[in-house]
Length: 71
Image 1 (cartoon, rainbow, N blue to C red):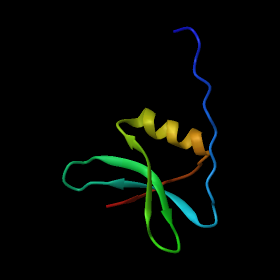
Image 2 (cartoon, rainbow, N blue to C red):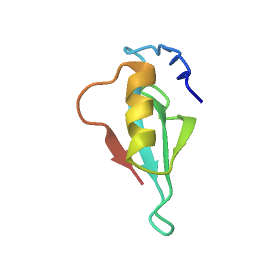
Image 3 (spheres, rainbow, N blue to C red):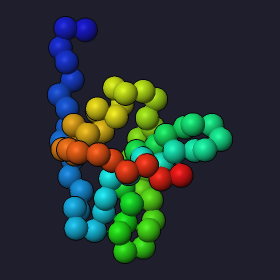
C-alpha cells in the first residue's frame, strides 16, 4: 500500500525485433509486443487496456518515440 513495486527493466534485440501494437479492427483490443523483422512473427508481451498500460510497456523496455500499429 505504501511501497511502490520496483519496475523490472527488460531488454529486447533492437536489430532483430521492433516494438509494435497489434490492434483488432473488430473489437479494438490492443496487444503490445515485438515483431521479428526477418520472419514477421509477432511476440505478444502484454494487453493494453488503457494509456497507463502503454506507458508501462514503454518504461519496461525503454522505448522512446512512436510505436507502429498493425492490424
